[in-house]
Structure formats: C-alpha cells, structure tokens
Length: 184
Image (cartoon, rainbow, N blue to C red):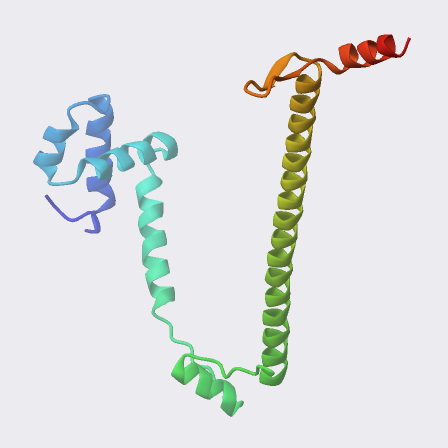
C-alpha cells in the first residue's frame, strides 16, 4: 500500500471518496487495494467530502502549497548580548544562584528536620515510660488487692494451722464473740 504522506491530486481524492460514499463506507478494503490507499485515508477523504462538498479538495491543495512556501523562509536574528548568544550556542543558560543563601537554608532545613525527628523520639520514649509506670502501678494495685482478699478469706474461715499441736483457725467474728462471752 502507498504511504499516507503521499500527495494525491484533488480529482483522485474526490473520485476515491465518492466511491467510498457510494458504497456507504462498506468494503473499503477492496477499494483500498484497488487504489493502493490506506483505509484510514479513504475514510478521512470521504468524511471531508461529506462535510465540505465537491470543492473541499481543491482548497486543501491550495492551502498545502501556500504553507510549504511560507515554511521555506529563513529568519536571521542578530543577538547583541554576548552572554545570551553563548547560552543559545551551547543550549544552556548560566545560573545566577546565590550559593551562600542556598547553603544557609539547606543547613537550617536539615537542622530543623533533625530537631523534629529528635522531638518525636523523645515523645515516644516519654510515652513508653508513662505507660510502663501505669502498668506497673496497676499490677501492684492488683497484687495488693489479691493479698487483701486472701487475707480476708483466711480471717473469715475455719481451718487447720498446725494439726500436731492442735492449733486451729476460727473466723475472726466468732473469735471476738467467744472472747466477749468469756468475759461475761
């Protein structure tokens, strides 16, 4: 098939587009083989013919020739500034950075980031300590309560302290009542 960039005459474009329209844009593959034009180009021509009428290809051809004549012009530019001429020649502009200011703000920014990260680490360590203290105090409280309950249970129950010596345990309320009764 022919190249899409190939130049075709206005009559040829009109003829191929008209045949495509007559076929209702069907079987364009056969038409493309016959005229050695890609299907996409035939569709484009048919659409242009539908929208623009019979004169569309003549005006497009005139526009193509006038634009190619305009693009052939060359423009010469004279540059008086040596620095700009050097920049254009080498393709880069000279940088006019204030390196002292750039270094200063880079150092300040780095220090601020370090201080911020250090602050985050300190906050984390403080929270870990506070949490450990709270957990340990809660666990001590739990242990003390557990010991009080065991002691209370031991004071409120009967039991054997030493079987060989005949020492027994009685509830404290019973012991108090018995002592009160013995005094009467």
